Each structure stands twice: as C-alpha cells, then as structure tokens.
Amino acid sequence: MVYSLLVHNDAKLDLAELEAVNEEAVDIIVAVLQEISTDQRLLDGLTIHDFGARRAEKIEVKKWWEFWKQGDDIWRLRVWGLEDIGAPYRIVYAYEPGRLRYHVLGIFHRDFDYNPSDPRTQRVKNAYDNL
Image 1 (tube, rainbow, N blue to C red):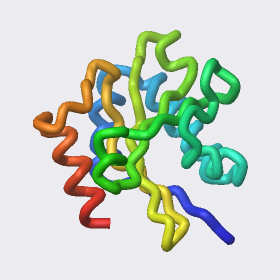
Image 2: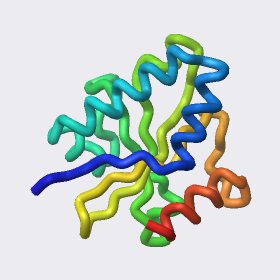
Image 3: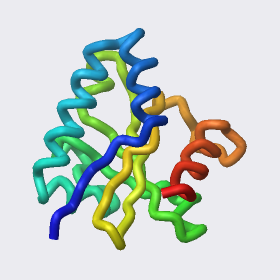
Image 4: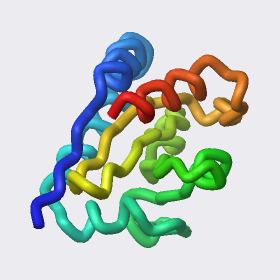
C-alpha cells in the first residue's frame, strides 16, 4: 500500500502568510512534512491519537475530537520544537482511508481554539467535505 501526503491550497496560503512573519517556522514545517511523506512509520502515526506524545517523536498527533464525534477523520499535529523558536503552530489534516491519503488542510497558531464558529474551523470543515 502506498500512502500519500498532500497539501491543500488553503494550507499553502497559510504557509505563505506565515513565511512573511517567521521564515524559520515555515522551513521547519515544510521539512517535517517532507520527512513524513517519505516515512511510512510516521505516516502510520498520523492516525494514532497521542503518537509522539511527550516528545517521543518529532511530532505529536491528536484527534480533533469535535469532528471525530461527527464521524469526520480530522486530526491536528504539533511539530516539537516550533514553540522553542517562538512559533507555536499546529498542522490540521484529514485522512482519506479509501485512497490512503493524508491532506494538510491548514496551519494555525496555537491560540486557535478549534471553536466551531471560527472561520478557520469552517474552512477546514469545508475543505474536508470537498475531498
């Protein structure tokens, strides 16, 4: 089985906006996404809640519980080390099991509270529904 990791256009725009304020953070995020895309063990970890917790890996994976309760396969990912450089960002992604695809849907500052009424949450849900 061949898994793939795709970056949605919305997430590409998030990266472009972040690059204007923290190029180092973008470099780290892009490098980690590239590493994940070529490492089956890390790809497998993307669907394991608490994968990489307590810095056991380069990343930490969590379910986005509000979406999970609705049956949506949406996750969030922390890249360990980003906070160390003053860039507390999370990567939001979805898994499409029928096609073995992961889709990066957004990259958000940690102060994002995942509130259903937040436009970023609505953007993620819309992108997920259109996969």
